[in-house]
Image (cartoon, rainbow, N blue to C red; front, side, top):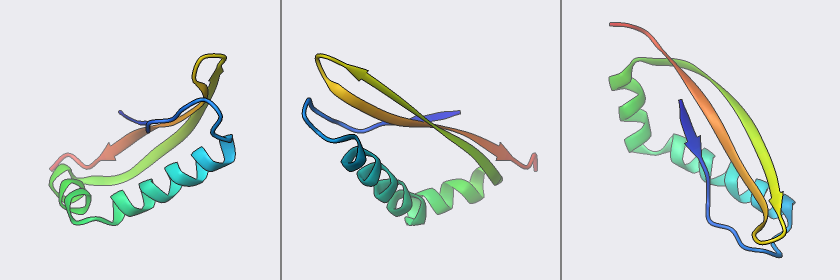
Length: 73
């Protein structure tokens, strides 16, 4: 299981955090390193969920958890 997060600060709108996170995930997963990792680990699928929290100190915090499903080879 992997948890993805990003820096954020008080005052950032939640929609901007979500948009930035999703754009970064698309770019990361399309990249050469991740594609090589996926092949080497035998990743055949994944399940991802989002978690959103809020605090009066840091504001909105968005991150996602991903369970990788790998083929034992």
